[in-house]
Image 1 (cartoon, chains in turn cyan, orange):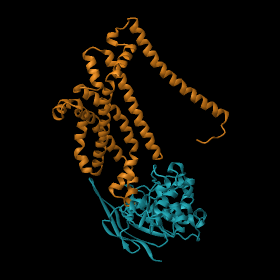
Image 2: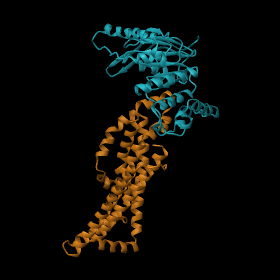
Image 3: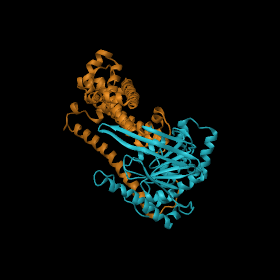
Image 4: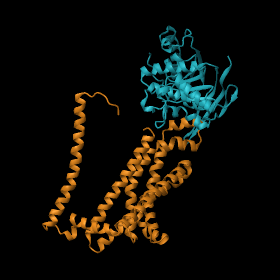
Length: 269
Length: 268
């Protein structure tokens, strides 16, 4: 399969009054077309920086990010942020069209595509509703459609479910996974939740603490199954979970007690 | 609202709510009647000197006399000054806030000046305004603007800046430029701050126009009050004050209605 998103030797240094911080250190990985790629790392490991670089909001200090062979990602990558970030004063349809409005590409073709997506994913009857009238799961779906109408080649997901309660989180995760697979998109999910990464992703990369670099990549070999809830019940799931958990734990020992970024405690689901 | 079958307990709740509202309105009206009645009674019995305190009857007579004369000219003058001052300070304040939002450097440069200007009692600038602008309604409008414009800038800018970082990131990832971010995100999400600020400015611009009229004026409610005070016609002072109260209340109501229309149109 051809590579859709590729990072080669990406480093990022940011400056504050106190000095400079190396957030990313020669990060390289490739995401194949149609792949659901997970990135887990301890908190403070530069995940957010990595996402901003992937989204094209930050320019890497050195190294290259390219989508579908072309350098630069702004416009080719859709970004789904933490929480849905729907604008409360816009109807669901107007929220979905926000990106098109900004690009000045409200063509009949694109409008039809947006309405089609709303219809396909059960939000059409809420087109003229306001975000506060929708459930958390539906809001998240609207946010995903807002990303999809721009026809991105890659979708970035920044812990998009972290604000939801556990029950909703499982079903919304499954929902988003299904939609992205149905649209044949490439996705990168950044999370600190190992079980979420395993349930949704085809591959999971583990980051080291700051300056972040890719420590290892796991192929998630759970019987070809697109039902993310069933995947959680697979015996293989627990094994992979343990391996990734160990991998993250190692970092803590390496750093010792001083200044070690905390490894988020996981709820084994 | 949709009609639904309502349970008896809910009907009881609604009835209680209605009754509660009735009690409040009745008490409010009663308070006015009681106050006016007591005032009139004490004046009639000679307990208070109606030459100094006037009385409701005297105020009414003054009002009736004025209404036949040039009361409406005075009301018109003050109302014009206030409304123009109010609108100007809103427009100027918002435009300056937008400019400051655009450039963090300019914002940082001007911050101490804004703070000092905000703390300065604007009435101190009265003599300067008269010399520079002349003793006319322009000076009064300037006073009304000066009193509310600084606080408008500060409040609106605070609203602009407090837009959540995540929402700004969203606009950035969608490729929005600064103008688009302003119109599609920052302005609408600051709407509550802006309308709250407008409500405060209603009072501020009345302060400005009346204060301006105290300094220089040939007509207006502030003029009537000062004139009434000088010739010891306290009924005139009271009458003008009552009219002021009514006008300020109406203007506040108008702004509140605009606020409701705007929030409704925005679906909030």
